[in-house]
Structure formats: C-alpha cells, structure tokens
Image: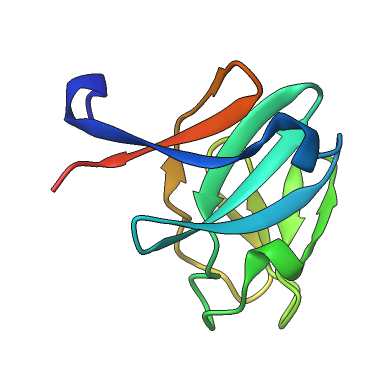
Length: 109
C-alpha cells in the first residue's frame, strides 16, 4: 500500500482517544480500531482474525490488544499475531492528525 493509493477518512477527534485506549469506528464501510499508545496513534482492523470479535471491545496492555472473545494477542503497531488462538496478523492502517482530527488511510478503490 503506497501513500498515493490511500484515501484518507476522518475517523475521530483527537480528544476522543485517551492514552492507552482503543475505540472502534467505521470508515468507508471498514471497521477500524483506533489506539493511542505512548502518544502515537495507530489503526488496525477492528475484527479479530480468529473469530470476528470486535477488538475495540478488548483490553490494551503493553502495546498489544487482547481479543475479548478468546484472548488472542496482537501487536498494535504491526498487527502481528502474538498468541492464543490467533494465527493471522491484523491489517494495519496509517493514521495522521490534521488539526484536532484523526484521519485513517485506507486503500482506494
């Protein structure tokens, strides 16, 4: 995915996302989980690759998101599947801040 192939979508206000938190949003029909970790913003798919649970309902700890259904772990920054029943990595998306808004870059179509 190159920068030129991305379409940027307004996802949330910066103020909506506390440090160490996760929130779920839908951008252009794509379920996205937004995170703020150590002051940096990240976005991943909001569905666990194991059983389709909403990761935005999971727990954030030490840079990882834990699936609320079967407790699989994913590294937030990379989407890498780390443990539990998960075996496939999560899709990750770039995030940028424009003013007081968070924008998520999704593949154009």
